[in-house]
Image (cartoon, rainbow, N blue to C red; front, side):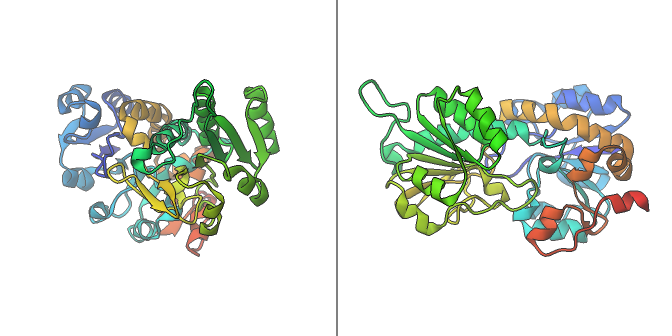
Length: 370
């Protein structure tokens, strides 16, 4: 198969879908690899390094014309839609439940779209996990930063200081994002409360921290009680492939301290808060009713070197399976990739995405039976 790796063009997105080592992996499995010029520049990988690994350097247009499988990091943006050819494979983060236009483009163009974030092994999301871990840690860092008075925050230092009260971090969601946010917030000395709906998970977290952070069942009463004196509230809820439930509405902001910060890590899937709207690294924050909101959709792009290497450790093995076996072979042999397939041959093949836009859901198993 001819594999094409594109340069990311989302605002300040510096990650790349393949490194030279990944190029070698694909070539060793018999595939040809095309890389867009300057694709790796954001993490200091030159075109010459890709060429040395065996890739050919082409333009975006040439790659779309020749490649059977397109590899990216973030979802295609509107300027890229026109390049897709019927029947191509797309392998990237998609977050389609929050993007009706892209969903319909992929269906109309009969693209076989595999989403990193919905590939599932048991209860685990192996291609989402490394970026969730990074986003959880960055959420605390960004929350701490935007608490500074110079950004409109309330001027609290999360770690506190000898003789001075520490800040409070409330985390809504106990998955990978929530756990990593809790680890960093606790490590810097903040008071930490984490809320979730999986009792076993909360028990696990309680043991990890030896009872030194507060774990609560997530309901509106516990959420409102927790946020009233919070300095940072992190939205870390996730329903794989589906739209994120709204955990707080605008009216609930009045329960919070002025100058507190909301960090919505779930913004790619629509966000945890009614007042959330996607922001960028260039313009990351805005204020609603005295509360600072941070909702950057590609948070890990800010630490692109670490993020790229962590991401590709997870995604390349699955990508090679898709390239080796083709779409039907891959979803036949690997249930994890069946979950990962979001669109195929003009159908929506992920139930969460279909439900988000009242589309007909077509079970990928039906393609296997054909």
